[in-house]
Image (tube, rainbow, N blue to C red; front, side, top):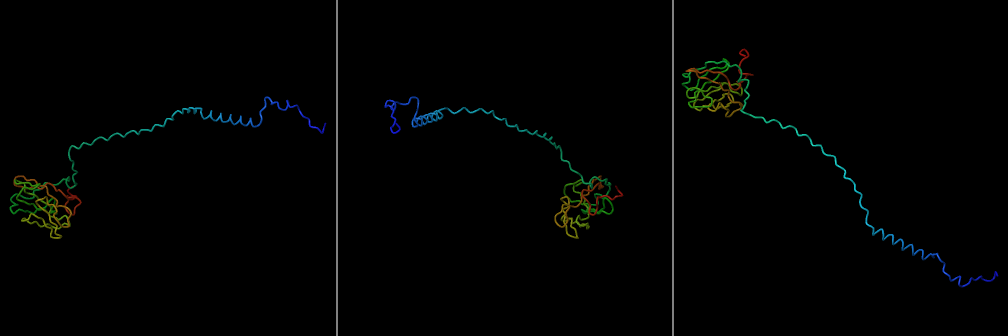
Length: 217
């Protein structure tokens, strides 16, 4: 029997095996199942997003506004007087109305070392006193270097003979030209009857830290 093939009956060899899949059928079945799973995954709706509660941002601190400054109400103009205007000036008689017939009269004030010139200008001027408000007086020393001033009645101009500074007597002895930088100091006047009194000085007399000597303070 060894040399003969053992043959099964034909009915047994041609009978299909029940409950078993060959390799080709298994691969086909696997491919179909995988494709069905992919289609099902694609057709499924996306998952609803998970709601994340909003994070509350920190509130910015509002700075406390500074209190508004109180308004400053200015009721009137306040002028700060110069020291030369608040010192205790003497009230001295320096001339009479008759002394001004020629339009100019020399005197001294507030002491004998301070020459002044008293003028009658013939028309009303700022600060003028007397019946016609045309009498004024100014320091006789130039504010540049203290030279004695010359007065010209025809032009109403003070002229310094040293460096030629000019001052207008009709306009409060304002500087017109020259190396001086300040106007001539004005002598404050009062008229009582026929007498003319000097009662103060507006401006600083040349060469003095103040207009009164230390012995008079």
